[in-house]
Length: 148
Image (cartoon, rainbow, N blue to C red; front, side, top):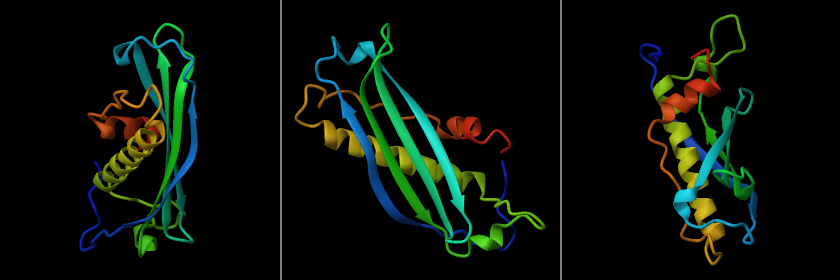
């Protein structure tokens, strides 16, 4: 894991949370929440000029043996990072955000996605569907950023 640079204090704020997409197929044959699964697709974009990091989480719910999506949500969480330029790797355009901060940001983005999917599905037949907690967001982050 990367350690923060000596003497630097990392600060961030949530700039925006935006529901990008929601889809539900209430005619899908789902017996109960135990026969469904969820997969996550993730995108991380760093904008040095505006000192912002965007994380987009897409959650796809499907029935195990069919693999047809019956519910999907996609949510953008934008983080404002004051003084992000202090985390520039010398002589590059790469930003070295501490791993612990990235895991925290990713966890927050997943929580926002879960919340907006839960809100959007209320009143539907999937309104009580179990929305899983990600037990180790650091592992998913490693898959997103294999160089970390």
